[in-house]
Length: 181
Image (tube, rainbow, N blue to C red; front, side, top):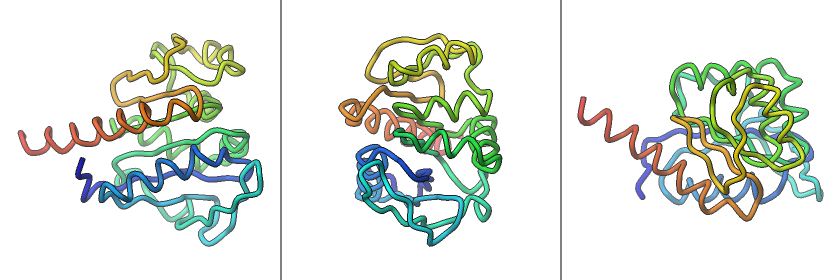
């Protein structure tokens, strides 16, 4: 699927889950999207749970929701660090309010909860944080990928093919909608 012209932010922080950053980052670059690792500071290296490095292409302080089509939030322990940065929380909230694709996998539901965007919506996550999603107002379901409007959630690394497929579909639908308008 050609995603040329699409801009995607993949949020990074220490203790990220390797596949949940690199699989979508590389897959969407192959599809033609401008895909950026976005951290607290541009050029900073963030270590995965196993120490694998990811260097932030951009700082959260230098990007704006209006310039992106999607945000992908990986799991691991990174979402707990991401949600402590109000700039990250605000970016996710602004992407949601603008109707842009907000995609979260595994423990990324923590950041969705902090952004207060789950009330009344269907979502999934890694089973250890399902109560967190429920307390944030989500209708939790145990499925490999859940699409609720522009919110896309998955549970774990083995769900990545379905997760990325739904992100690609949502981005393609954005393009189709613009062409029809």
